[in-house]
Image (cartoon, rainbow, N blue to C red):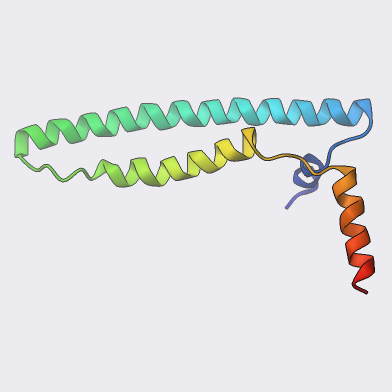
Length: 104
């Protein structure tokens, strides 16, 4: 994990830090949208090829399903990271420090 990843996990407390975090989050959303566009474009293409092959050769095994499902799982994790993962707060850090000190 890089220093930038760690910084994204903890809420910044300065205006400059918040701006940097906001910029990184906007970039992550933009990257997710690019990822989703590539996923849709490639899947439409692959399923189109499968349809042509299936109609001409009467082979109906949906082999693009593996690509769609596998890549879709990756895309779902990417979306979770961008939209649902919350940064760590100072309060959570303090509570964890207190818990660690109690268990010494």
